[in-house]
Image (cartoon, rainbow, N blue to C red; front, side, top):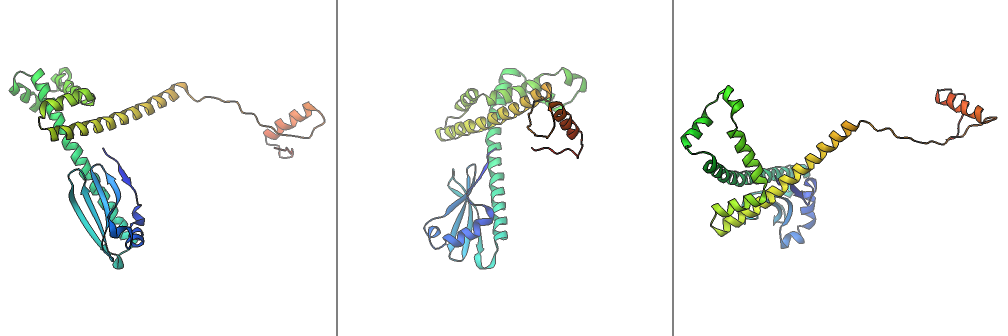
Length: 245
């Protein structure tokens, strides 16, 4: 899933509007957050009216707008509106990603059916029934899950599938770009999580490592043995003995 990039903190939006409403915001709107294909812009509708607009940059389409009278609002109210707008962008972006990903998976399922199932009715029947004893022996469903996950994350396979099912240049390029970004993000997360798991497992197997530390202290004594015994007594808790650290 995409991440949110914030350029102006929520709590600073109202003050930023007041500061720039007679200069920068008169010339253009300012993007204050992004999430996937969506951006949230700060606009000056007039000198006393702050505007927040969610735009789908890929489609050049305005999704949602909200305005505030700066004379009758507060930093907290505007900040809350910004948070809601960012949450809306996140939800819309996740929906877009899920729809595109599901479409590619549908093509993979069609390929799997062509290669593994001769009788479609037999396939549907197996999916609609449940037999506990047969479930342990059944491998087809697991094969499909493995097929979907493994092949989808194989960028070459996925791009080849997109080229096969999409002849329209515009949509093909859109799905190719989506698949590249989505797979790169998914595999980077898998790699990071795997690295953390491997490190935790290694630390557990090796156990706690012991290290040697040296500390220098000074104690007054008549000889080395007397000094050694004094330090041992000090470490044992004898408060009568004074040391210089």
